[in-house]
Length: 298
Image 1 (spheres, rainbow, N blue to C red):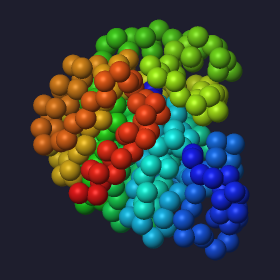
Image 2: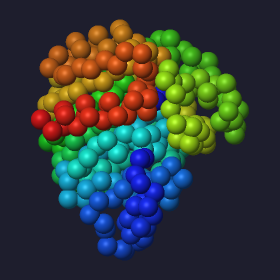
Image 3: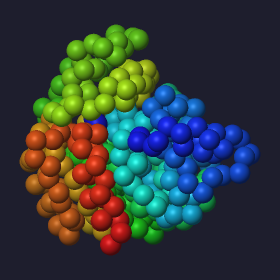
């Protein structure tokens, strides 16, 4: 639900940044796909939740927090991050995803928003631009409503205020009964990560395998939370300027969902990408990235 850096530069800069206690390079490169796990760091939030993240970009730049979708993780941003220049980027793994700790319960938007608040506190980030995708966009919207003083600009990629009946029923028909371990090459997982436009195999194969490794507690807990979710009453409390991006081939959040978003966020900017799907920022990062940059730079 969903880098490009010359190889000669990646290793020395990446190692200088990754070594614990080492001096931080001014520009932290986007890790290569094979280096992503090594790039993850962890922080313990004030609540006690352990959260993983990948830090990238210009460490003197304005903070930008990226929040991934349902069963994705920080790697979800690996194709887009090279397009977001001059920013101090923090791509987090939501609880139960990637290398973050997996609690036995509590996978609602309120829980994810509370973790984001704790992350900003732990990393001493007073205010940031926030970009969220799918579940991450819903989390970002709720967080922005609850903590307007901590959000400068907000980008919602493939968002909805609630879960449309068709995708919701498809998930309920499949997720609770998924065999464990989940086969990343199963038809369900290939459908889960289907895209109208091909994306790089070295990315999507890893992303799908990491999604298949997400625990039953997280898969089921998020589905239960989304089934009860409608964040539209929070929309009026969002004070940050908002950009909404949507692909018209989105198989999860349809055109009706977008009309609802336009009704509850009437001042937002909207961009539709014809022929692209739920993960359009994987499909065309070179197009989506500059659009986000333009909005954030206003």
